[in-house]
Amino acid sequence: MMKQVLAFAVGVVFVTAAQAAPETYVIDNAHTFPRFEYSILGRLSRENKFDKTSGSITLDRESGNGRIEIKIEAGSVNTGNPVLNKIIRGREFFNTEKYPEISYISNDLQFDGDKLIAVHGLLTIKDVTRRVALKITDFYCFSQEAPKINICGAIAKGTVKRSDFNMGKYAPQVSDEMTLRIIVEAENRIEPESRPR
Image (cartoon, rainbow, N blue to C red; front, top):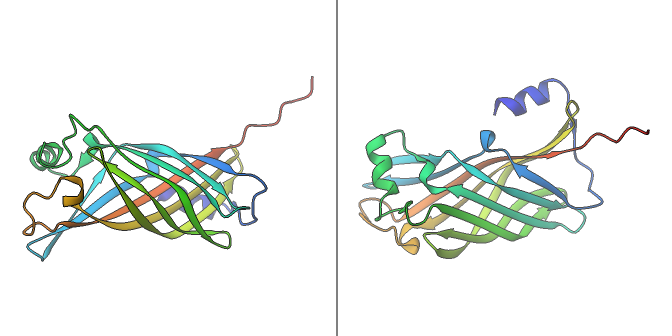
């Protein structure tokens, strides 16, 4: 999150006015952190993350809609423990060798004025697709002057059941319900105007 803090500190110009046309932002992998959290024996909470994310976000503020397409490299799951990484990448869970990609696609964005507050889309894990709603918090957009970049970020949060995606092993000792939390930042780079010849 250091990038945002520095940007605010140098007095960047916020993007608050409604845009005349849709804007497409490319997800910045270095500042995007998909996470999933579950409990063990109803007491211990464990949060893990993925290290590789790509995709795009299109915001149409005029119509109050847009499109989100997020792709997560399933094999980039990072628990902080090499042994647990291997287990979670295995056949009983993400089975990353056979299903290398997790995706979330939405054409149903909900705005409150100029602020994105919710997304309704399709989450695909292991070739199983379920409709999942994500609540959006901490949504922000701002502009950086040099180089000229528009940046938007947010935290998206929702819940799913592991068993819905054929990953229900060890339930209920390990909770079937998982909390998804995606900290995302995306960029729209503005090309400099061409100089007259």
